[in-house]
Length: 464
Image 1 (cartoon, rainbow, N blue to C red):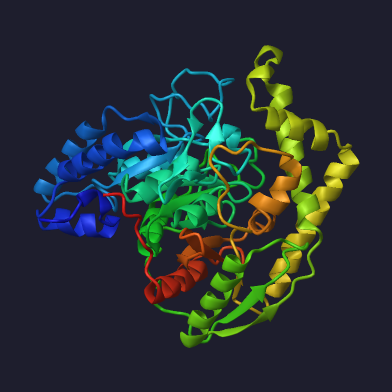
Image 2: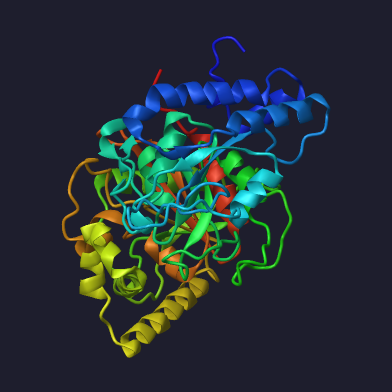
């Protein structure tokens, strides 16, 4: 493959080349490893690398040589966010306050990747316990954006965003409790899918278990659907996992949007900020979907103030996190966690249950909206990424003004949402849009995202 960096191939391209013996999983891993050695000192995507990755790639190469691939992802390099257990590695959650003892067993998603033959390259960085959007943490420091190292990747799946944009393999696990897949995907020019709640099993439960999902971060839509096919399988360890739907989520992905109704959402329950680049991206997406045969119209949902609802969920989760840590470790936490816990975590049981009632009302309002429209189109992020080393000032205000105003509503309502790159903004950085569908209609967001991708293919950062 002269002139082609094997690390930059899509997962589907890798698998096709493995099948014809034109490329081996060992060659691909070597290409990925070379890029990591050369580029990761700048971007800081990894919490830890897997010293057994080459052995796993060799096992995969032997299976392909025998014509007996193990599963859908045999030999494809993948990374796992450091909120997710990988047997034999500690799950530090970006925190100096966590136990360095290695995990005893794989999380459901990792078990699925390994069963499909994927090669785990390493664990990627996360903001501490996944609490915020700027991509830094006390344990591993600052993770930087490959499109411009001066700005953040976003978080909390910061390392996955950097790894995807830098070409450290095609497939990356992120988690998302308020936008932690979609925000870094948007700022790093990636596809990021937050599935329907319960579609992908998770265990152990994290700090934000009631709203958190796990999903793929990739450089194209078909790879996201391919990875999703492996992740979205029932696991009894997760008591909220929905029944198994063993399918290849690429099936039907090319069906387009002709005849579908798309509602442009301008207000996700409150006056969410959006800059000119974000507005332009939404209008561009609307025109592409219209040309593809969809009916695009303005849409409004009778939502409660979702910023107030999510603030209570976020505050209560962080207050519990602080409370269950041994007192002598609390001083090791990011000061922002303690600030949010103190400011938002002291609510009464009645106030918390009121937030839960409003969360249900938000889900009901969006379900009613989806009686009229198949898809919702809106921004992903309010503006471009801030500087990577900027201090976090007033995180409560930043949550709904600078970080996640367009993403956390879909965590509250538990419906699927995907972010798609769509050209570049005035600063030369990727811009994006977000598509959401009714709960469990993950297929529709993948179909619509594929339409956008075909009209404007995802760009790859030129890093040499």
